[in-house]
Length: 159
Image 1 (cartoon, helix red, strand yellow):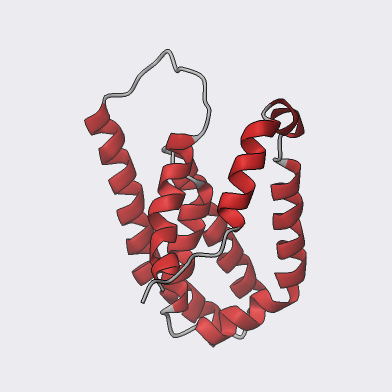
Image 2 (cartoon, rainbow, N blue to C red):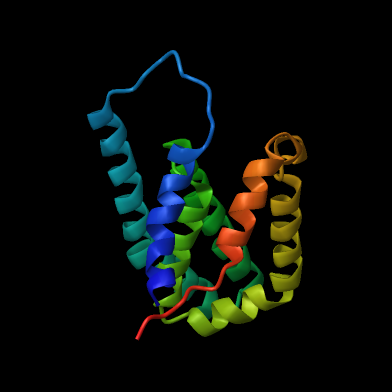
């Protein structure tokens, strides 16, 4: 459970820890923080109020294709919005997904996403595999030899 709780702060830290080039137009910290809070509050408002109403309208009219389109567009929009303010796209999709999983439509959402699950998982693992910098691994092979056993070492519980 601790791992599940730590995923949100870790996803928020990913862009901060990433290697990026210096930007010439710096935004003041308070303005950046206001943008981030505004986008996250917007996701919560849309995910709690607007999106369930739209999904309910689609479900009542038996428009399951529209239901799926609204669902996927909402997740993509949430991911794009947080990426636009400098946070990981994963965090936006995760937040909206958590809000949708608590909605009355969670079973219909699961049924809508199920046919795409294997394709999306494959796409995720392909994207992760393509993001590996083989040159950096070859260049820092000594560091890699130290870090891999440490990460793979099972944690020891002391009683």
